[in-house]
Length: 196
Image 1 (cartoon, one colour):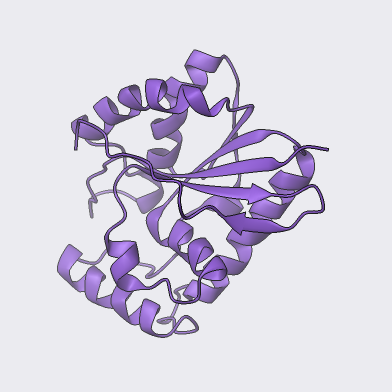
Image 2 (image 1 turned 90 degrees about the vertical axis):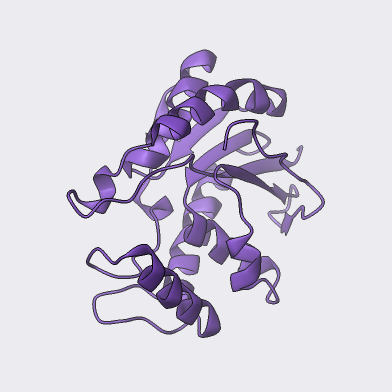
């Protein structure tokens, strides 16, 4: 049996807003252009299945690509963003809070989700997808903190500064051997898009 490859895609550019629920935040005009540009960049990966967080910005990121392939996007709650705080927080305050989460992966404010909790459910989702599609190439559209939590599971030294360098969008490659052993291919680099 051949290897299974999962590509974790951080969604395209979005603009946070306190006027609507986080799940409804859409892509910015730049993000929509990025989602179109992703088509040609993702085609060489020979993707067989497309999954996404149910959050609007993650789904919108892969709509053009899935449309080109003619396949359905399968949404999965396990791939949603980390619930760092239940209410809207200004960007500067939010970044300070995220830094705290990375300093202590078990920390969470009241009503929030720790990085370790997010990591656990993300890995659960990835394992379920891998078992369902052995030998396939799968794309999962998700979010920055959620993907960062997965990468930290493979490299405990991965931290806030690494997460902060993540592009929007960005792609990370996880390979599964036939026996189910997983490895993050940290040598795989997704070059930034022309539109950012």
